Amino acid sequence: MRRMISLWLPAFATDRLSRGTNGRKRRVKPFVTSAASAGGLRIVAVNLHAAEAGVLPGMPLADARALAPGLEVAAADPLSDNEQLARLAAWCGSFSPWTAPEAGGSGPDGAGIWLDASGCAHLFGGEEELLRELIERVQRLGFGVRAAIADTAGAAWAVARFGAAGAEGDSRCVLVPAGETQAALAPLPIAGLRLPGPTIEGLAVLGIRRISDLVTMPRAPLVARFGSIVTERLDRALGVVKEPISPLVPEAPYRERLGLAEPIGTREAIEAVLAHLLTDLCTRLDRDYMGVRRLDFALFRVDGNVAHVRIGTSRPVREPKHLARLFAEHLEGLDLGEGIEVLTLTAQTVEALAADQLEMPGPGLEHALASANVAALVDRLTNRLGADAVVRLTERQSHVPEHAGITVAAARSAPAEPVTPPAGRGERPLRLFPKPFLIEAVAPVPDGPPVLFRWRRVLHRIARAEGPERIAPEWWRTSLAWMTPWEETTRDYYRVEDESGRRFWVYREGLYPLATAPAQDEEGGEPFLPGMTPRWFVHGLFA
Image: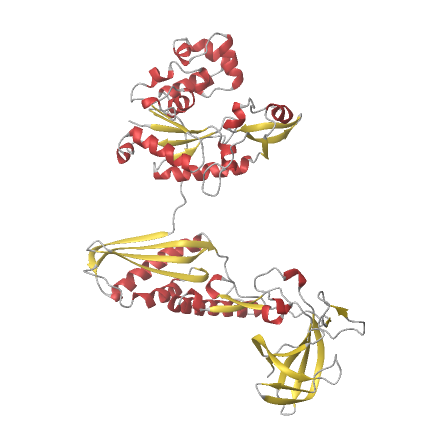
């Protein structure tokens, strides 16, 4: 017999916004969501504390603030609510393979999720244990919840919202024994049939307030006055008519499996099966315009153990031969035990991959082939040496030369596009030192290039010099961790060549003082002039 669970989240919208980083609720004050209407802002959803203060959905926000002076308000976001509800319904798949969010999503009365518990209860020790475990885990996610299980979805929905406390007085979960649907529905209000508001009011005028009043009435007058909706909802709740609910359909994973009639135990046989699985998987990826970034190759041994071989790529790939080469380096020395009987290939990470033009000659073809070759090399090196061992250079937005470029893991970043140097920027050295070296230099004039300098006990006499190129401090970056205090001074760079033809990139740090009277320091000691003793550094070497 079919058993359905209705999971009711009475304050779903406000609970979603009130959840902390650990899933627990972080608001203990009246909290509501609001939306604009013809008459101004009105309440859309309320939390428990707001409801206790008398705030109701549909109420003008001004009236709500009068009832609850400390009211917290957030803008209603139905789209985000429905997305979160769908994620929660998918999460409920750990309790049932058949789950679905209720039609209409989140509203003033909360939100709900259906679960088909047929054949699942024994896995948790019974229906009551299943409900309690489900409720406790949903509450740990930060949502208030009530749940019921019955023979039909309609009955479970009604009992979850209007039923009495369940076993041991626990109001969070209600169980309707199999075959007792009508008895459980009889004392519940007509609203338990999910009827529109005007229909409920019309039935109340006739004195029909409970489902038991409706069951005994002739159907023809009801249909004539209210249409077929009343009898249809009643029949669905009683199980006379099947409830049309569409469950969530999980996305088909990119996974290939091959079971063998006889175990295999050689590398050649493993590679042959892998090639077959890769071809099938890449065919599916090509059909969906997708490429794989991470692959897991699982080999199930006869003795029950499982060996895993995992590879990654620097960009989406769907080329079987390239992927097979990456796997080949890891198959050497793999312990196959007494043989392999089942093999699976799972694409753990996939991304969209557009088609490349590989037939029309021209610069585009050359660039595509070059990029593909570099990516293939990065993949092979990364899978052999590790992701952090293979790096590439990329630009960083900084005028300070030693910070203008950084290294990043090649497998986790895209190749940098060629960048045109900004206008006015001077030539840069072939070799740039990570940190400048202090030198002793002599300049004939304060703001001129040096005529000689001593570095590493060697005296260099300057034959030619070009410059200066001034680089001012990046005052807006002084709070960044990679900026140091000595970088907060002005630099004047010169390209110099000594008498032996060796070319250096040197700079003067700091500015010479203006011809003004020096200021005394705070203790009345020696005069202090900012930058009164500039220093010289060598920062790079030209070819």
